[in-house]
Image (cartoon, rainbow, N blue to C red; front, top):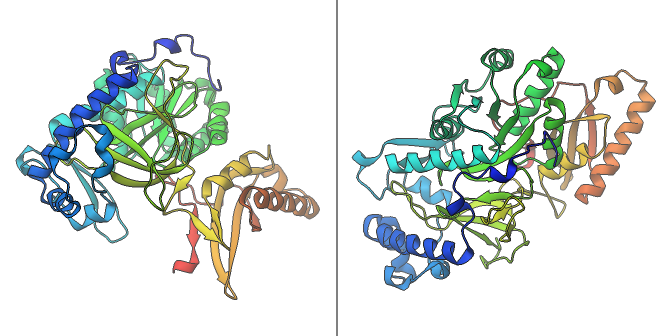
Length: 443
């Protein structure tokens, strides 16, 4: 285990009845909830009634969770087409809050929640906080953004459900973040992994790491690697945990990894996961990579059936060392929509991050991919920040480092790249989701 040793990790389970439930018991619970949910959406959501009618499927055809493949898919485009409230399964006056994410069309992807949905959301995040070793005695510094984005509110609701103190900082102003972490005695913080690394480096530069009481960070909202997790942990001497969620399903709290970091446990009593081949939608076996698809089994306000997340991962259903029987999805290799095809080769930003962090020095884990088309050929340029000590060295050593980076990336990606070494802190840092790719072929 990386990070700080936790002696009582076997006790870090909030709801053993659910989180350690047998496969047969869980399947029975999922079946009961799916049958009820399908009847609900057929009767109350015109979109799903039409979709099911087109497939010739009636609620009575769904006898249990094994029949889920008979049901239609839902996509982000469907949400935009029914914006803002076309997918509600309850009257609008039953909606307690809305959350949303920005979209490329200018319209939000909006999700609506009843009060019960909000309570379930908070409970699921609280499960994750307990998984990270946190209790009601902890102080959780939330530097995810608040507002329509689900990050800040999700961690806030989780802290409330746990009975812990929430410090609602939101994003921005790194110096103020660190000051408040120290002054308020924060014991955990939540933000994107790229910003967590930025905060860690800033704390290190300010010489305050040893004055902080932080023992855990809850990081999500963008793909990241184990190498980045270990980097954050090594600087701050903490345990970092990967939390996953998406606004359409509930927000953060759909899944999270435990202290063993061998996959993110999915709260499948509320969110049923499928891993499907993106090409033909056939089910993938455990360990096979495919697209993650979710069905909300108990959501009231805006239930979704077989929502295609575009996130690529694999799943394992065996019992974890922590004792949980909840299935584990692996860290995402990327998304079907952030994958770039370079001269016929599939390239994901996380592959670059893994390769750079495996080099053991010389370069920083801050990078940018720029894709161009020259003479009808794709050209990939990877901008990489160089460690301060290397950038002040003679040109020959920089050239050697550039060649080394190029070789490492070619081996990792399966395609040759142009490497551009840049000075430390010249690639823009993000307090929200990091922008890793500029594809000039699409401009």
